[in-house]
Image 1 (spheres, each protein chain N blue to C red):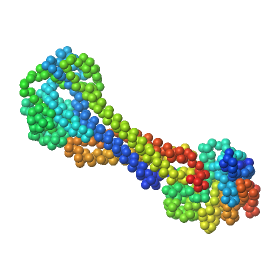
Image 2: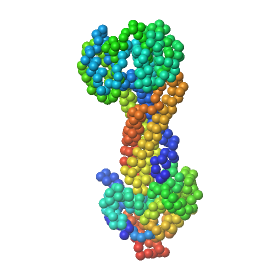
Image 3: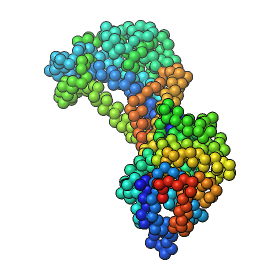
Length: 231
Length: 378
């Protein structure tokens, strides 16, 4: 089992009068290389679930295990090491480092500029169609190009899991579709988890988790990609 | 260069790091120039004082009474004494004006036959003219003094020429010397005092090994009432006490600069960090440890500070070189181009500032939650 979530609760303002449940009693198992969408309106807890799965948010109660390792039992340093080795992140905003070139941004997670690493980065940029922009600075790129560069950065360490948080929110529809197509191509190599409130981009998702007020309301399994493994 | 390397950061953010680099450079320049000027004063005291006494010790009677025979024999027979020669008299002083202030330079009166030996053993080079002839009212002077006072061979100095001279009479400059010792030498024995008599009253002995203190310890402890000694250690002690206060001033300046820089660069670093907070938030999110990022911040800051330090030292050296070339050498003055202790003392600035000016950014990084950054709450 890649991820196992048991009785997960994430509460904001613990100890105060108005406690907010970002996540309430979540039980979930995620397995295999596939594209999973997490759907829900703003404030439903979908990003909280994503970042909890990534080990960036500490649950108020319950456990999250990744490959039988419980996050709460991992030290901060081991948690960081795990994120850097096994996970890739694409955020709502590209969060590219402004003073670095595109290729340096892509190489940031591995902090390596060997010829091999550069070739790999250029290969990824080539696949994403922005190889010619490798030496440009982020401010010289369009929104879609920046997001593609951020995707290349997320893929450079060959992650086992790719976390994508509202990655199409700041893109026009065609750029959004293009980005999703790229992630769809990558789902054979990793578990891709995409958080969005736009169902139209999850056309190729293997599973879609619907979340509402911190509670999983339904899990929609794709009929086309019906596999043995999954949620 | 790796994407997160320090030099890549500096190369890509040259205008952001420039204020820190310039502030460091100016501060180091201030401290280092001060240390060069201080060293110039120390070098002058060496030239006019200690260098002479590292080779010779003067022992003389300050009254009509002679130096006791056994005391003289103890000196003459000591294994650390090379040779003994008569010093007819200390004839006065020549005032040399250095960068830091005025210094007095001895004018010693020897028998003519001893002068060549004195000049050669002190590694002084007669760069112009000739050595003085006995009773001809002639003098040899150091090149720097000649330059400063626009004196040439054939010119006259002395109280009869100008009351500003601290040597009685009128002496013709017959030679100009250069080397590690600045000394005026004359040969005046108009009273025809026999050499043997002077050897009992006022002597100069050469010291073979300045580190061997047994003789000087003995003669200092057993000094007869009428005898005075001028030696390397007593002269050094006097000079050191003068420079102690200068060193104190230098340390105070250092401390003030460090405090001012820690506060100002601390604020600058804090503003820079706030502008880069998202960068660190993303690096934390993708799996960089905070300790790695603290070290990254320090390496960047330390490198900029050290580059500022190097620039400060180089600029100071350049300034000293230009000053020497244009203003000082022609006036017989100089500033040394390098001062090891000054450079070491100035190095404390970038080292301390690189740590203390990061307190605020480190505190801010410590409380940075990557979720706040990537979620947009910076």
